[in-house]
Image (cartoon, rainbow, N blue to C red):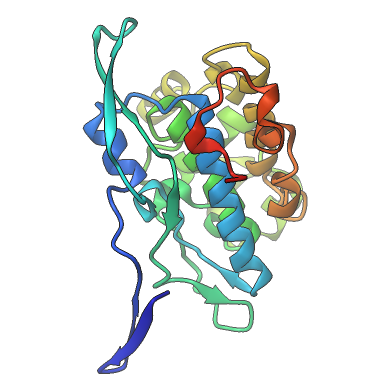
Length: 271
């Protein structure tokens, strides 16, 4: 924060001038995924930034690729042999977290609905109350998008959103169903969802168990998906916290760069 001022009751905060958002760069790159080494560096910074918020009793509540900006979005062009097209490769993966307009202190009123739809945690949809873990869910969705180039939960309907979650992560836990204020989404303790309907066929065609999205069976890919599974845990109390996430094996090359043979200088957090 460089400065702040009050404009007719609106608190305005001044930050450094930043570059493209991680979403805008992805879009300009024809939604070609980021390389896993770049995802690792961006993920580490995002987790560190949001962990700082949580330490200060704040929940961001609107984490998404549009709110993560590159400090410098200069890029080089490389030819992608699989896609048979030129691909933009960001030169420096240093990012900043922005847009604190919806950030909420622990003691403040918690709105029933928060987060942009595609990054909304299950406890928010089910109106079970929310806290810091809802940010962790959003980060999991963001990292998947960086990895695959498309949104994990592409929907605008709550019940369909839950059906997608079940297709990807398995059934919603009974405790969450029983305590939910949204009983209209369930019947006899199960999601009231018809897989034979048009919407049901769409979810079945578009969604699959999380590990089925792996692009490679290399160790770092499996490590990323292990982290994603922990971030996309249904139960907020069981979802990984960010200090623990920062010690996940996926981030080990940031601590010991010499263990990674394809390390980028821009990803060296020790400089």
